[in-house]
Length: 254
Image (cartoon, rainbow, N blue to C red; front, side, top):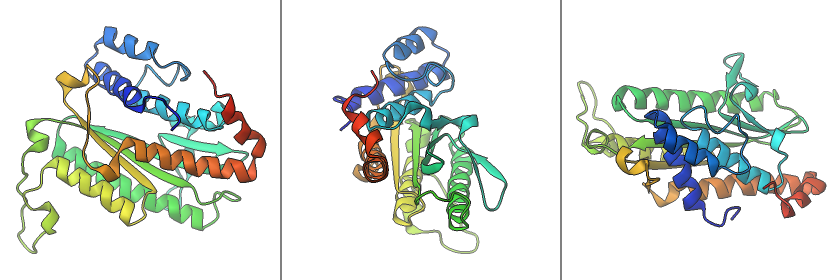
């Protein structure tokens, strides 16, 4: 693995998330100081920037040039059903799109926010694949697509949610399912329907999250599996297409 202690890296990103969300500057600054090689403009702004920096460092250690990892406004890609879409992260090397991903979170208003996240994820990925099939990313190989979400672990997110069934019965998986359960199904189904190459889902309680505590919900959706899949995809491209870049993995950025 690209990190000696990935759990520690995730914990730092979780602490950064909660510190930024709650405006606790002391904890936020402490988490930023441990970010090492991450871009200053990435870590320190938005809530999910700790994870963006972690992923960037993993890619750089795998041999990707740091300036090939694009964030936010730089990660704008053409769509098929719309002109463009701004992704959270994209990897572009020599005009080839290698990977694209979204980093999302839900800390309140779980019902409305989760429905929005579902519509965004399914729509965005469908649009991306159609754009690829239409040749809008030529000469890129099929890009790796990832989805990561962090949900606040609260009584509301863990409690069964009543569903209205005025016309037809809902899928059994959603009967008495909590918002955590529903998010797990979203991630699993996107992977199994090949809307994404890999998804990751973690939960964290605010009071514990400020100390870096988090939990994985499903072994198929761990952040380690997510990162391993991404790094393997990018390294395979570098090794076959750009051997000089692949060799740089031996001397990663600090």
